Amino acid sequence: MPRPLRDVLRRNFVMEVPRPARVALSTRIADAAWERGQALTAIATWVEAGNAGRAADRLAEVADSWFREGRLDALTRALAALGGEAQRPDLLLAAGEVARRHGEFDRAEHCFSRAQVAHEAAGDATGSAIAGLRLAQTCASRGRIAQARSLLSSCRSALEGDDRLQADTLNVEGGLALLEGGASEAAGYFEASLRLARRLSDPYAAARAAHNLGVCHTRLGDFREALAAYDLALEPVQPGMPPAVMMTPINRSLVLVYLGETERARDAAEQALDLVRRYKLAREEGYALRTLGFAHARSGDPGRGAACYDEAERLARLAGDTLGLAYTRNFQASLAAEIGQAESALRLSDEAISLAGGQEALGGGHEFTHVRAKALLAAGRVAEASDLVAGLGELARRFGYKHLLGEAELLARALGRPGAAGPGSDIELGVAVPMASSPARPAVEL
Figure 1 (cartoon, rainbow, N blue to C red):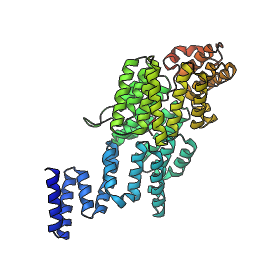
Figure 2: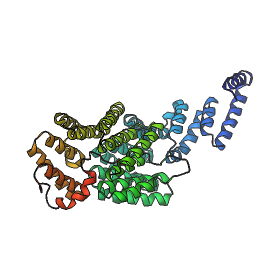
Figure 3: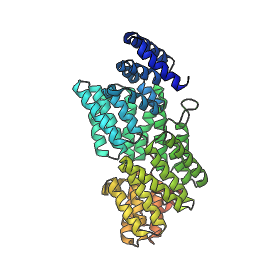
Figure 4: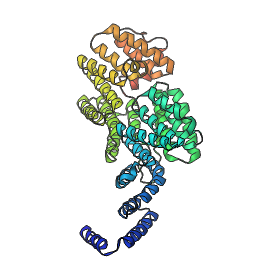
């Protein structure tokens, strides 16, 4: 029906039908629309009939399944239609999760904090714990490891009876282990989360765990295993549906760069970028831009690489994504070092390390240490670079990162100091070559 005619009929309906009859009829129309799967129409009709409470109840019932199906846009529109009812604590949790998945971390924290306060005021310990878990996920996404661990510790016992929330908790534990450098430890958490997700027949949780196992394999330099894990995560939940984890195609394209398949990697990264832009996912867009820029740089086109990094920087600043900005500045520093802009490389590296947590980042985030050593080498500050290379070797041996041990030896040889990375580094040179000069860290899905 043409919209002008529909508007005329609506006005006539409002003017000529008494309100009680109008409300009753609208409610029946909304109920029928809901049964037919026309959820957004039903919610708008309930709200129009003055029954926003019913609309909110129904949305709360389906919010979790919509998240598992990736229906973030539908959730956003439904929440917007509810008006004041969207301020209920259960729907604040939903609004916060939509914001978190879009990379809007300030808004996510605001919603989760309000939900936690409301649940505590109502004496709902489980609701408060769920809000605490979501806050922990958000803090971990922002690289605030200590705060995330504290939040997780305070809510863990209240979540023990719910297997679905346990899968979430295991996933956050694994993510924190990864952020601290422990890929092997993290893999244990993700494997447990995957088993639980399969038992629950939860396709999103299973895809998330498989994706994160791919991150672990990538960090350990096991690239074929990483591709297999990402392919498992990409198995469609339903025909025609987007990936359950939008970051998976991005991470997969990064592995293709490491395998030297730069043309395939560029194509894959461009497709991943188009996908996340279609769904307006700012955080994922930043990762896709960095990966595409890295693929361009690796294939000998630093200009296009720099343009991608600049756009990723703009997005990170706009979203207040401190960790994303840290990674972007690190990519920019790496590229500056490679094209001989030593002072710029040092300045960008300083900023990246500061954003990522200062000296703590140099201790656990090997990509920051690696790029810093490259920048120092470009500036001719050999002694300082040598100290960092030795530290990289120690970090690699502690976490079992074969590729990193080889990378450290590559840097040591560039410094004219073979063996400076310590025992075993020369053995791992072959493993290091694909990841040499990499400022990249594959993205974990929290």
